[in-house]
Amino acid sequence: MRPGLAVILVGEDPASQVYVRNKVNACAQAGFHSEKHAYPADIEPSAVFDKIAELNADPKIHGILVQLPLPRNFDTEALLDAIAPEKDVDGFRAENVGALVQGQPCFIPCTPYGAMKFFEEAGISLKGKEAVVVGRSNIVGKPMAMLLMHAGATVTVCHSQTRDLKAHCLRADILVAAIGRPKMITGDMIKPGAVVIDVGINRLPGDDGKSKLVGDVAYGEALGVAGAITPVPGGVGPMTITMLMKNTVTAACRAAGIEY
Image 1 (tube, rainbow, N blue to C red):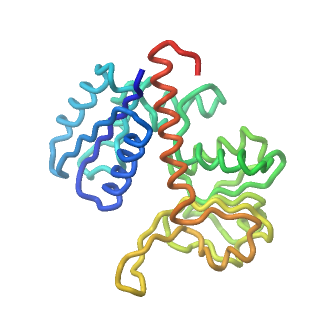
Image 2 (spheres, rainbow, N blue to C red):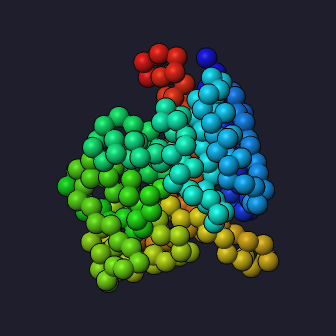
């Protein structure tokens, strides 16, 4: 049995192209069968729906990933729901989301899944901890909050309407920044000794004229305050791809009737 992953990319977004390339490279290194299906931004959505239907029926493909964001003329929710539940290795379909809320077995969205593995490998207990998640997206913020709650943390989710964000962050033993704004979380917003997970991936112009990747946390400031912090790049990003690989292996095992 050889796990198979298909990635669908629509449009020319530079960040999305980098993400897809990294995922395809990871498949090659792991010995997976992988397929990349790239379309121009002006493709008719029906063509992408047809491709998903084809991949749903392909026994070589165990996982299907649609790289987000999609062009504005696409109904993102409808496209994600077109993926067969057993191949939804990103964990974005309603069935997987509902199972996650209930604490049932499911495909867990890869970025929060990777963050939870950080805690596990570092031996960080979450029971009774105050956890603050900054960001409420369906991709990271909401599933991250669910996973932290299932692990025994008391969870606060902050967003654009939150009053006094700094006060909430300063209560956090565990702080997850997933708001998509570069260096928004500064050092004076972090409780001394807190564990900080920086999910943000933002591009800013560098001193040499080239763009550089930065997170949602002002890393230099946070480093002297936090007890532990994930860097950007090199932190959550590689773990996201690792958990995508794990979900794909799980899907392949289930398809073959193998306990995993």
